[in-house]
Image (tube, rainbow, N blue to C red; front, side, top):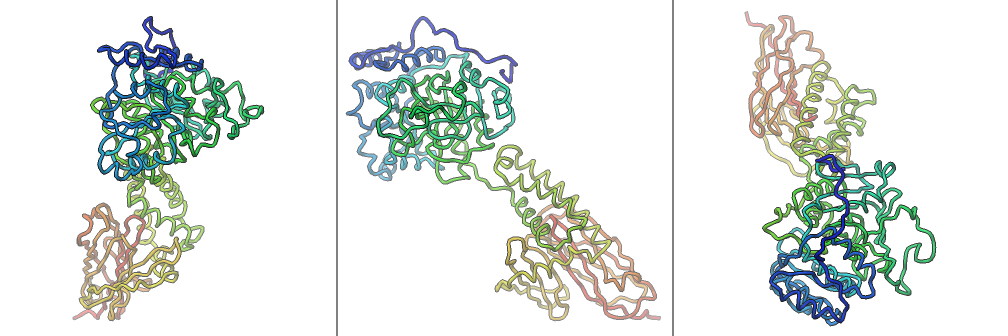
Length: 628
């Protein structure tokens, strides 16, 4: 069903009276090509089908997809591999597909070739010439750059190659607009205008009929498999071409040896019978290079696809990590007309250092195609990563006992963070803005809970993090000279956690005040300013100097040691400020003392909570007898 109209996509229909392709013999091909190219208004494109009844069937099937013939937009450069081995007329038919043609020998030094030749490149040659050398170097030159776009035209023999060149002149029919994604490894969102089938559909729908009974503008098959098949539940996209002879001595799948297929044979989908303008084979090794192929060409998915009516075939040269991000990116690209190869390789650019997909068939003219996407980078928001490390430490370091009241909420957030850093969520399901909004909302709530728990019980286990992590750390030799809030020099140093779940801690030590501040890296920095003395029954004015790690809300509190709490009142016990980040700002507290407070030395601690990190600053002072 069409997701926009609610109607079933167009089904194949009889071709027009005027044929788009002209079946010819090899002997007729040179003259037919010359005649075709000589006309101002191209008519039927000659195709040699001699001895290839499967190609004759593909020509008939293609007439249901295309309604006209036109000169395609040429690429900048073209090269023919093994021109002397091709049937006469094939190279001539391909000549209008590139503005300039260079000798095959120039590819011997790929670096020199790209240094002197700029622009898009079309490589034309039989499949047996698409070997590791020179294709690998040409393909790698396209990684993370738009300077060298690579397109191939190939086939299992001269007839198949000529057929694929001929298809480049065909213009898709206006009514061929169905776009489909069949995936056995994902359950992607259903975008309007895309027919999406996943593993649930494979159990309840006739997938074979859906695939073979629809005229596809673009269709992608994603699943596990090898270079001969793609698995879609019990259905299988099959690379076997019954009309092609096997090559003695080459390995084949089970059926090559008279054994039944490993999947139900009544659920096989012959790829060369799929009526599609563009086929995307999003499975590992769906289109290996000739000298890297696992199976006999008779069973190759790529070659069977090229034998069919598809003008463009997208295949994977090796393994890749396609998942939700690639499915979503491809669906969006299909709706906008963007290039499938550029889209998929850009989406995968953050996962492996090579382009995984190759294009067989000319891309759209630049003026007709959306701009190629920028290479994706799997770089989640640094705040997500910082919070993830803190959650790991809080939940696995034994700092918090198993029954600590924070654990359930921390565990829940940890599950979210784990999803947010995974490629499927980070690059497809939620935008970075949506992830950050959800994360900061959770952090504000948790920071509030932590602050209130510490204010109610300053001996909360989370406050022991400097000792717990410090005991499992080693001293970083870099030491900074800083100024204590008492005005005297102090040293600030960091202890580096020795295990992945032990956080680094930063401490400042003053020879008079001792260890006055503790914090985690990328956590708020605090200083506490107050008078050195306060009278019994008096009020100690405290000015906390806060430098937040990032702009946003920070919660603060102040507490005194247990033996002083009955004689004091802290105002406010906790407070919330919206910090500018990276610059100091003052937060005021008051500590009121009872008239009966014993005169002696005391201290108070100011603490700040932001993004699950607790920072502290301790200040010493004295209570003196009330003056009369």
